[in-house]
Length: 365
Image 1: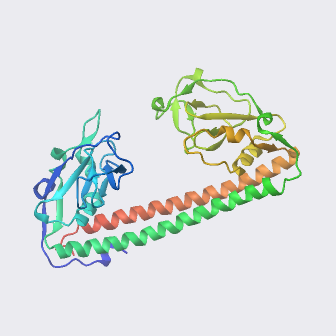
Image 2 (image 1 turned 180 degrees about the horizontal axis):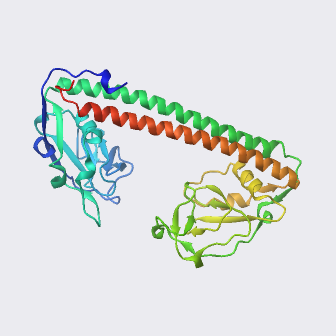
Image 3 (image 1 turned 180 degrees about the vertical axis):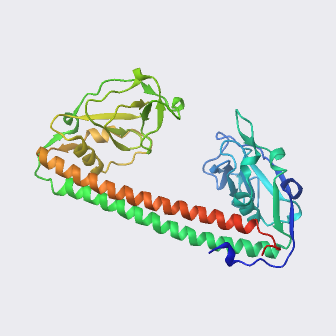
């Protein structure tokens, strides 16, 4: 669905400022201690729903903008919600703009980044939002027709995105099934050793707290988050120097990473595993991936890993299996990159459709 497919109606459009047509305010903030997490009503913060409560402070749907923390994020709330003070409520004066139209307009039709102020703590305020220029059809029926078109286009793009995610999940599932097949079925008669007898001690090194991670630096920080590199550091005395590749394990997250370069350790819940001589590090990494450790939430999972055993076939078999899964990972990562690029393209198309339509006027159509 493209912008040019939609023909605007012959009604007048008004161009004015957000402050002229909308009332803006920040409601009373509810702290996490005050929330009743078993309540029926969602609590909205700057980035959407942050919890639940037993009361609501807005009976009807509202359009809100994150004004502190996650700045500029636009949400259309559920009816009967509590909206916190780090979200700005935007209400059309005299209901001249439909809430659904206002939601699209704020999300894609205007540049909210120009309303951000404050260097130490960036925020958006009524004062910074008020001068933003907005355009809208004066006929509510035309607004509704535009919203219906945008909803339909968005649903089509969502379906396309879902199909891409399903393709990625299928590829990952096939790899996981292959891992289980090789290590749990095909290697039943292979010698195994208790997990702790399969690893050697790792030299100690400084652990850096997440709040101290740098965005740029000389040395990569590896921690238990899903991203491979999680930050950077500059002090060479804090670097873990490797003589052989290691596998890192997230004690809280169960994340596994194969690392063959010097790095700095993240502080929280990172286990560095050095396989003993005679155990191929890549083979060891892929074997750990085949384990289905129970998810204990944010509890520690290393105790589950310690209760396992490691298969140790002949070195040439280890190399053959490691190479097979390395090659599978290359193909899957290429597929993931391709699918991610397509999803990005769909989101860019969504933005282009909404922005293109909401910045048209009746004269342009």
